[in-house]
Structures are given as structure tokens and as C-alpha cells.
Amino acid sequence: MPRILQADVEEVKTRTNIADIVGERVALKSAGVGSMKGLCPFHDEKSPSFHVRPQVGYYHCFGCGASGDVYSFLREMDHVSFTEAVERLAARIGYSLHYEDGGAAPESSGRSRLYAANSAAGEYFRSQLLSPEAETARRFLGERGFDAGAAAHFGVGYAPRGWENMLKALSAQGFTRDELTAAGLVSAGQRGVYDRFRGRLVWPIRDVTGQTIGFGARKLYDDDQGPKYLNTPETPIYKKAQVLYGLDLAKRDIARGDPRRVVVVEGYTDVMACHLAGVTTAIATCGTAFGAEHIKVLRRVMGDDSAAGEVVFTFDGDEAGQKAALRAFSEDSRFTAQTFVAVAPDGLDPCDLRLQRGDAAVRGLMDAKVPMFEFAIDRKLAAYDLATVEGQVGALRAAAPIVAEIRDELLRPGYERVLARRLGMDPTSVHQQVQRAARGGREAPHVRSEPVASAPDGDATAPVRLRDLPRTAEVALERDALMGVLQYGHRIDPALLARALTEPFRNPALEAVRQSVASVADRARVGWATGAADAVREPYRALAGELLMMPFPARDEAGALASATDMCRRLILRSIEREKHELLGAVQRVPADSEGGRALRMRLRDVDAERLQFIET
Image (cartoon, rainbow, N blue to C red; front, side):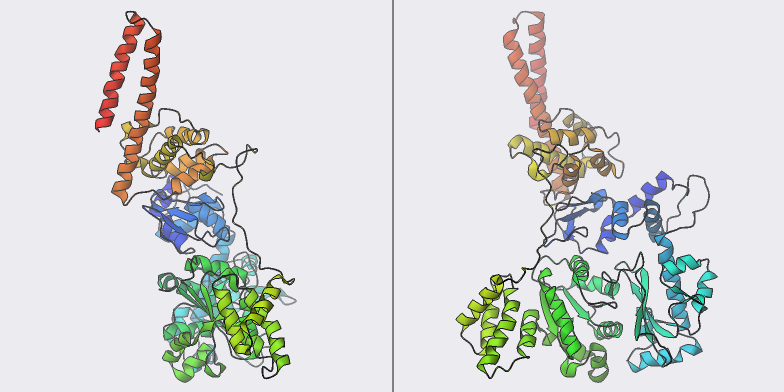
């Protein structure tokens, strides 16, 4: 495949704001001058250590050490090739790429073709919703309160009956049968290749960036022998354990909410009903139970680093709905946000609630929410006759492990009192049973430890990190100066900066970074700092990334530039004073009236004058 011209690679990166790309997957907030932070998408963490610096087009995680530019971010997140990452960003900004052989852009392959096939299928299904055959589908939507505008907003379409209608339509657009099979759009059987979705109402399932990656389809006809809902099978781009329907539409309001709230419902029509009723942060799983992978996705979008957020689960009031709530409870401790359950009156789901009682009732459902722990406790107690002593004891034994799961030392005593009131028992007895459950053989919830870089001692290949540096004034100056140069070097006077980087640093790790920074010829070029950080030799490369991404201690850009410039002057002064000290020693060892002595005194005079110049400035 022809290579994209390097000039175009750089131009696309320059025109792309990395914060926009990362922000589609991670809720970012300010972390100081020129820096943003959020929960790392590459490892599970409770507090944000993932930093993005838009002005240098770079990201770095202080927890797991992941770092890179916008291309490496897309490659890691979406598992695309470098060429596909460049092509995707170029298409996003409308930039025409050029290739080394001078020809037109080569036809994309791999995952890009799967995205393209799903997008084309979505367009086809939407067009078919207007066909005469789709009357049953339109009636189904209308009976549930969804008009043409709602269908268009959510991209709902119709898969016509017949074995190969969509297959023929997409084949005519240049998609091969192998590509359509890999995308999960067609299946293979004794009759050959045929449409997977036939005679069904179809919802496009999109990833958090809005790209269509699969479909969910509901059967409409009695002679359809398939399941009520049929989803896209697992493909290279569709992983049902990580997909949340409606997240592409909900993410903006989730991130902007105060508090940040996510509403988890059970189906596609429930998501539609909630959004149309004004609950625009509703999402749903796609053919699978809500699990740990879904939580990871939601936490990043929410910026789930405090208990200020809310996750509200809405379930049917029937037995299946209650079981779904308890399954969600088993994952509850993974959220930092507060978790709740909301069950509508009469057990109605949000779609039916909107139909029967209107939009206000759907919005009011949020007011009826109860804490997840309380809901789980009540479900356990419901199985026992609390009017009897035996029932109370059995209920206590069943509910105590739930309270024992609560790791918050302030919350657990409160729920012990709630359980005691529900049972009509002595709080001391309840506390003792909870304590027994906490240490009585139940496996403690797994808490993922944060990755920690190995200390350099004893392992020459272990990456050196900021936390490994000695805590001395000299090291602090070298560290902060490099931080300022990497982040604001393009705005510092070139002559001043070159002079500041001339003298070797005392700390070996910081010296490795200085050498790489000093070797850069053009610091006005966009991306010079990321290139310098990437060029640092191991085991010091991670340290360079941290220096590039560390929030700079300044109030604003002007203050940051002034501080970085001042530290360059301090480096120069340190170098001058070091030379002066050496000269004073040399003067003592050479006869004053010798030629060497006179030369030393003249140099000493020049050094004093230079020192005075930098002190005065």
C-alpha cells in the first residue's frame, strides 16, 4: 500500500485537536494551565491520572505510563493501523491526503471497511423504513409513541423481508461478501450467504464517537422463527460487553450534568422514550447483562472520580427486572458515583410509562429512585416472613453480606441501622452479623491495584519516573526547567533557551532528557516537544513524557511563560556561578603576574559582568 506523504501526516495532526478526539471517549476537565485530565482509558483507576495537553498534541497517564499523540491514541483505542488512523482524522477534517506514488488514495481495508459497511447498511435500512413494505414497522413505532422525527433522530430503519435485499444493495456499492460477513451483516448457510436481518425493525448501534458498529433488530411478523431481538454478532469492531446503546447521544449531557448522571435502562425503545421525555442521559446494554466492561466505559465518560455523580438503574418491576438489579449491584462497588434503582409504578418500563402517563412521569421516575444498597436489601428481605423470629434471623443472615460489601466506613454503619429498622432487631446484633459476614469466608471484592512503575534500583531497564527523582533543590530546578521548556519552549527566546540547555545536568535521568531537548534544531515546529520526548533513551523516556504532561504551576499562560523563562535564566546563572567558582580556585593556584593569571582574572571579570547582566534581567 502506498505511504501517505509525511507532510500530510504532520498537517492532519496539526489541524486536529487531540482533546476533541480523546474527549469523545474520556470526560476531560481542566488540570492547570494548558492541561486537561480524566480517567485513563487504558487501565482501571478510581482517580484521574490521564493528562492531555492540547497545545503539544500529547497525552500521558501518570498511572500506567501510556503516552503518545493523537495517532497512537486512535491506534490503541480502536485497534486500527497507522494509515487508517491518519485517514480517519483526515476524513474528519475534510483534508485530501496525498501518497508517495502520486496516485489517488488507496481503498481502505480492514476495520475501516467494517465501519464503512455498517454505515452503508444503516443508510440502507433507514431508506427502507419509508417503503410500502415497512408499514408494519412504522405502525410498531407509532403505537409506542415514536413519530418519523424520533425515528430519524435515532436512525431507526427497516430490514425488508427476503434473503438478499441488503446484500445486493451493498454489493452494488463495492462491498465484498467477505467484508459483509466480517461486519456481521450477512450470514452463511446451506443456501449460501444471506441477510442476517430480515423483516425487522432495526436500530443502529454506535460507539461513543458516533460510528455505526452494529445493529439491534426486533421481529415484527408472526412467521419469524428467530428471537424477539437479534443483534449483530461479535466482530472486530462490535463487542457487546463494551457497547452501550445511546451513549453517543447521551455523552455530552452526561459530562455536562450537575450532578453527572447516567440512567441505565433495558431496551432501545426505553432509551428513545427517556430521551424524548427529557432524560437525555439514558443508555442501554445491547443483548447482554450490564457488566464490568460497561462500567469502565461509563466511568471514563462520566469522569467518575467522586461520589458527586449518579448512576440510576431502571428495571421492570417483575422478577426478571429485580434479578437484573441485583446483578448490577454485584458490580456496584466499581463505581465511585452513587448508585440508585428506580422502578416505575405498576412495574412499567420507561416506554410504557411515557405512553400511559406522559413525559413528566418519565422525568419523575428519577425522583423515585432509591439507593442501590437499600434496594438490594429490600429484595432480600422480601423473601422472608419478618413477623416471625425465624424469618427475621433468616433475613438478617441473607442481607448482612450485602451490608458487609459496603467499603465506605461512613456508609456501612448507616445501612446497618437501616437493616436493623427493617427487621425490628437490636442494632448491636445486626452489626455483629455484618462483621461476621465480612470475615466469614466471603471473598472480598477484587480491588484492582494501580500499576506502579518499578523503582530504578536494581533494574537498569525499569522506567524512571518523576517520583523516583531525588528531592533536592538542584534536581527541582532541573526538573521544573525541563517541564517549562518542553511545554513552552516554542515561546522562549531561542538564544536564551539555547544557552540554558548548554550545561549538562547533574541528575542522570534529567540529563538524558536535556540532551534530547537540546538536540532539537527547530523548536518553532509543531510537535517538536513530543518528538524530543519520544527520542529520549530508555529507561528515561517515561520521565520525559511526564515532564511534558505535568500540570505547570502557573495561574495562566503568561505566568507560565514568565516562569519557564525565569528558570532558563536560573540555569544560566547556575552555570555562570559554577564557572566563577572554578575560576576563583584556579586563580589561587597560578602566579598573579603570569600570563595565565592575567587571563584568568580577565575571564573572571567577564563572568562577573555576565552574571550581573542576568541578575538584573
